[in-house]
Length: 107
Image (cartoon, rainbow, N blue to C red; front, side):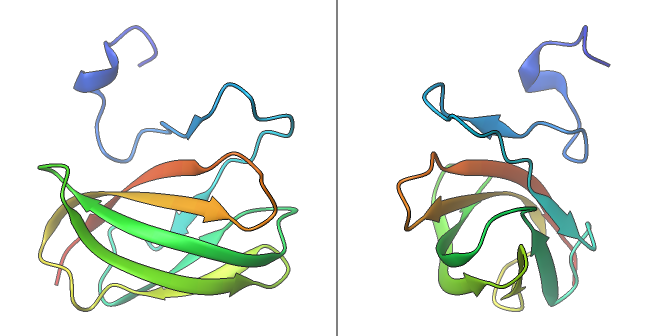
């Protein structure tokens, strides 16, 4: 589906967005997706503190969570989010470019 304009892609298409200045490309994966109450965020090769922000379909911040990535994995609590599509923004403490991944929350 690479021929579709960006805004027409489905939430589960791989649409990892990275800042142009990123030297090492990291592609996040969210499992499971759709999310029930908790999810694992997998960022291969990334260790240490990370700040996660849930952004709803209207561009509002729906939640924030701090986590420590251990072996490229962190578990996030999505139980306070309403059903629907979200962007999960991950910002790293080591100056690495932030990454964004789409997710769907369903109760």
